[in-house]
Length: 258
Image (tube, rainbow, N blue to C red; front, side):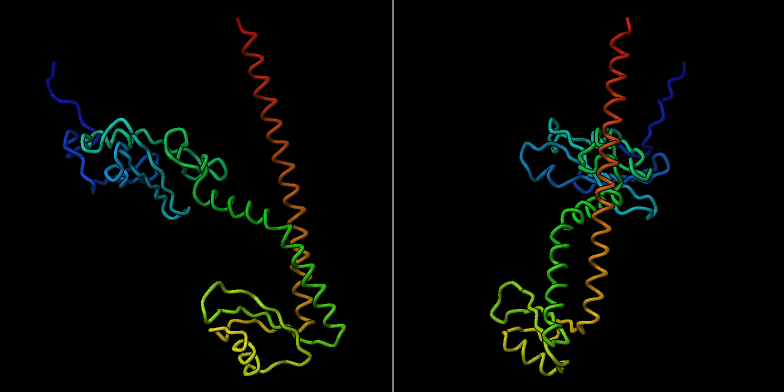
């Protein structure tokens, strides 16, 4: 019988050594480079326990993706390098549920990404925000179109949309002006100065003919997005119902087995 010790998965690393704040470790796992770091709550929050951060580097295919894992039962002062690496090994990487890129398994890490990679997660958040803001955006566009039509009927030719940056401080705000001739830069600056703006070049001047075209195109796109969002919602509802039926069917079959 050989007394040769088993090879360690971390050659050259003393796993029994006390863990230091600056400890890091990088390895390849399933074709993905993962990096471990020690998170500051480990030593800054009393009774927090050991917490690590883990980052995915997939060669720039997706946005930076990080997660964490924690052992609240293990004080940082008592943790070893082996403890940190064991926690690191517990964090699993799975294919993104949307695109298949590397993502963190939510069952083994601290994350609100729900099995998505960072790129897909951020795109979904942006899409959800866009969906939420669409109804007020449509109302806003319709209001702008109506104002442009009313002012054009009265002989106005240009709209000036400016941002007022108050010299006295406070929040910036938009103001809208209509004119019957194209105002000069000097006239615009005088108007903004009179309004108390510290910035005199933050504005857009548009002929009403061009403005109406721009607004109508924006409204058409917003209305099309509204239809697309409704279709996405309907599809998601059908997929969820299908998954529920499949789960109930599987449970029913399992309950009939002896």
